[in-house]
Amino acid sequence: MDKKIRLDKFLADMGLGTRSEVKALVKKGQISVNNAAVRQPELKISPAIDNVCYNGERISYAEFEYYMLNKPAGCVSATEDRMHKTVLDVIQSARKDLFPVGRLDIDTEGLLLLTNDGELAHRLLSPRHHVPKTYYAKIDGLVTSEDCGKFAAGLDIGEKQNTLPAALQVLIAGDVSEITVTITEGKYHQVKRMFEAVGKQVLYLKRLSMGSLSLDKALATGEYRKLTPEEIAELKD
Image (cartoon, rainbow, N blue to C red; front, side, top):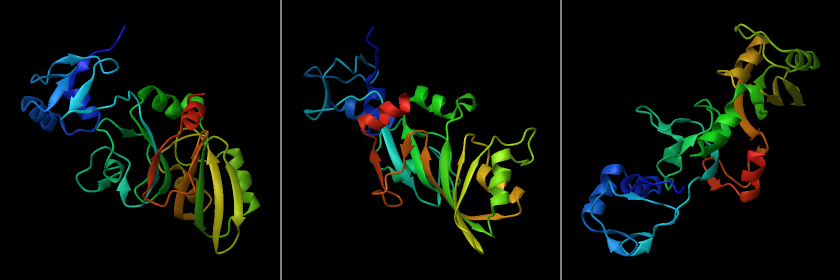
């Protein structure tokens, strides 16, 4: 059975404006449904069937959208924040019902998925699915093979249970080491707390991948793009 929604919600979801803004457009007669002007924002429509136009231009319907963002430092992984810029502020042309899948700390950069597909988001974030997430980091201090062993065994970061095994790889060992680490959990500040547990500090952190999705190297910091159909299918599998 075809799902019906309010006209003003449809218009807001498709990025035409806020609910109050699109209501004003409807009442001015700038919106038509099936070639007939309408003035009732509460009108129920079938988005996949009805032909909705704004000043004669059809508004294409997409139930779900998926964006890959190379998150910059300084913005928060939230839909609203009074103090800071949000990741939705970065994706300025985005529809209004998007949300970030999971969180990256305000100073952490890299891969962030934004979508309005709640079912996929739940599956990616559910602790029982253990979706792997890989990070690149610069560490204050010499990261050793002993540290790799501790990460692989699980670490006490001050919670009831130790972390699950994590794969730590040393790229450059020195006073400032460079590493990649893959974890299968999403505890608060987890990577930073794991290094604190071995007496070291994270200086820089960037997420490279989440599940099957890897950060597009062509995306500069702060840039984004829609996921390809292949990337979406792989995430859902």
